Length: 404
Image 1 (spheres, rainbow, N blue to C red):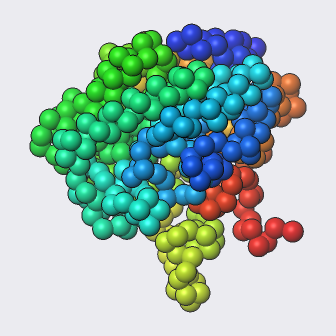
Image 2: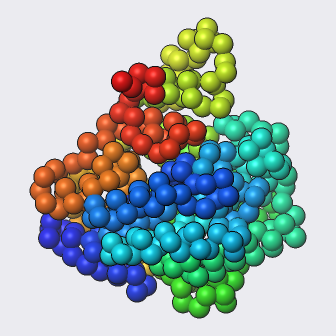
């Protein structure tokens, strides 16, 4: 695909994009305690819009209290009282001429009861290796139906708040991803077993949203694969993509990995052990001598999978062959050469980025104007760890105390 065509306008279910580069959903740790967007988030999204993003997908917004993130400042969309604050946000972004899509999520077992005040929940009572909580509560029929209703209601609120669409977070080991995964979902009722049964909760959410909002755009973010035994593989992801298309999905973003896999979702050449040991809830209170022992172990035991760039393109290409709806590829696509290749090779219709937008909110404008041919991101992944208790920003491989 040529440079010019990357920056041509296009549309997804009536959402008009000024180019084919999308800001992928990224938790910002900036929301108010109520879950309402803050002034800092409004500025961030307006900066991204003015910086040339074709569309903006927000950080994940929770649909109910037990689905809150363990990280601070998570957006929420669980209450009608939040709609006016979101309306101010969408109006501000729309004045910049860019569409904004709200990502909806439930964190499932990938959170902490110390944060939510409630026991973690999951399709099956299997402990998460990273969050290390007691075994989560296996959801019953009534609880699953309640989660479906809360996703539907959250989508209705998003429509009333002026969002151009919503994206369902079906990736990265969060609740809906857990249902889809043969590794995390060990049920033998109508919500587990076959791919069709594991997809049922997503199908019910789509059915409810269609009833609630008509043809309102609903996108989905899926795992093309993970590295869990019995987990997601590319051929099953393609099957799930066909189910999403049949459910009325507007576009499918293809990612990969879960949090307990380490540096799988966001890869990089060096494990950010300094950041993890200093700032993660799992390790920051650990005695210094234990940290000293763990540091080299992390680097040996938890290397980032290779390749570090363009690592979801095979999965995206398989999904694109399986469906007619637009496919969005994310994952280490940080250069104009790689963007052109991803779009021109038939792997995807759009490219989304996360880390490049963290270091440079105006990265798309710079690429379009020829001021840069690549992101300045060094893939240190300190941003992904330090966002646990800090507003989203680029740390460029340095801990906060090292900053002058």
